[in-house]
Image (cartoon, rainbow, N blue to C red; front, side, top):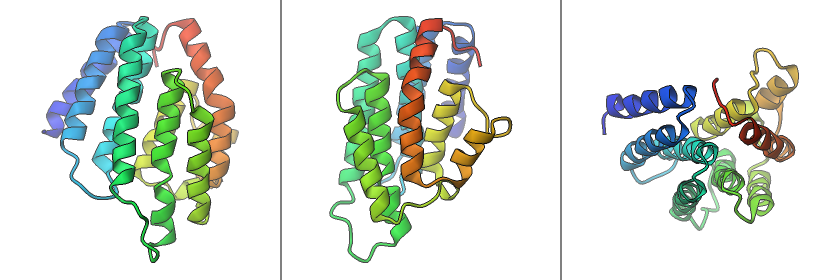
Length: 206
């Protein structure tokens, strides 16, 4: 993979998305996901893999907007399998693992929860609950300490909810100064309705 190839796929996807050509946008986001996942070396943190997961989330939303539910579900199931595989590579957790690294493992259950939400699959709350359990094992860091794998989840949330930390005080507090467990609760109370609104409008121009 080259960065240029992946970015070209993303740029094509974004152009189709802005024009409301959601099926084509989903195809290009999927292609970008494969590029990023194909360049993900073994080990933790999987920063390139999480970008591929982000692309799968965007693809899933685009396919739902296009009315192609099967493709949406396929991308979401792929994303779940990748998250499960990345998590399984690092089990059992070493007893002497640094607390923040331990907490970071919860992110993969957040991805699973997001994929289940986008794909209308069962087990959304269970995935988020497991993410919170792991965050507590790692002393529940604040969102301001987020690494790249969390940043893509924040970006996905911002794009669906259409909120910016620069203009929204509540979101700025959540984004920078809130424990991960509280962030997950906030997402569960906000993201489902935002997705419903997005699919009802059937447009995603931003």
